[in-house]
Length: 258
Ligand SMILES: Cc1cc2nc3c(=O)[nH]c(=O)nc-3n(C[C@H](O)[C@H](O)[C@H](O)COP(=O)(O)OP(=O)(O)OC[C@H]3O[C@@H](n4cnc5c(N)ncnc54)[C@H](O)[C@@H]3O)c2cc1C
Ligand code: FES
Image (cartoon, rainbow, N blue to C red; front, top):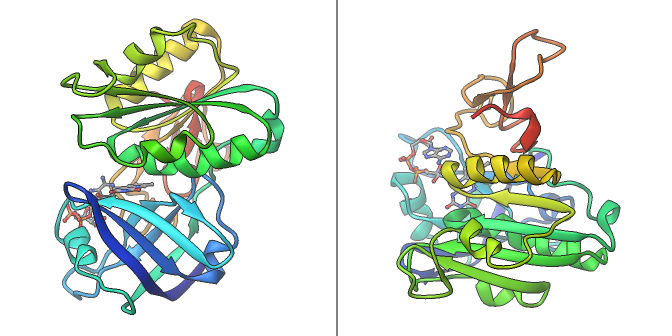
């Protein structure tokens, strides 16, 4: 984990209030794994806490993030220009299961809304490792983003709430229109979607890993501001909870109590 200052290479709106941000930050980018995130610091000193954003893609030098303008911090980020700098900590968290362990398997990636970006990095890794990748992407309406890129990694299914693109309904509705088979499920998205996937994977007996989002303060495991309920007792603290920032954000669906 490194704290450093990155150089903005690119920051453009790619869909309504959704921005793609590329940061030159070799110390962090070179060690990044799918499912991990970084914390970005706003410059405005009245906003002290860093904002956690998932890694959408990374190479040796550059991180690519996709974020939605949600409040004051992300609004500040949206005004960044090429050549500006940004304070950044990462890579943080654990990440999705190692891709090499799933070569030849059917890996189904579910992404809902702003939970889609981390699934892009995962899709690339699983496809490169020789998995048969299916991406099931859920959007509110025809304002889709990143979906084209997933076609490089395998089959892509789209669900929209208003039915303007793909299946009308949610990601599980779209997936159920197929055989619904998978050896491994990975997902990131809104809580109702993750809850439904936990139930679905239990019924089908499919290993399932969910990337959770919780409000964070330190993002380093120190403040306990981001705990979620778990099934198992933590060996250290003897309580049934885990920190999303340090023990996650990716958890086995079997271990989490929603
Ligand atoms: C592990 C993880 C990965 C994430 N990945 C992405 C991503 O790839 N793209 C994206 O658009 N968003 C992502 N988010 C959500 C993003 O962190 C929030 O939208 C962002 O922090 C909002 O900051 P703000 O200042 O604009 O909003 P404000 O509402 O003004 O934020 C106030 C405070 O609450 C915290 N906060 C508010 N909402 C969230 C939230 N949903 N999660 C965590 N902290 C929050 C902020 O960090 C800040 O400290 C992720 C969150 C987590 C926990
Ligand atoms: S945000 Fe502080 S422990 Fe997770």
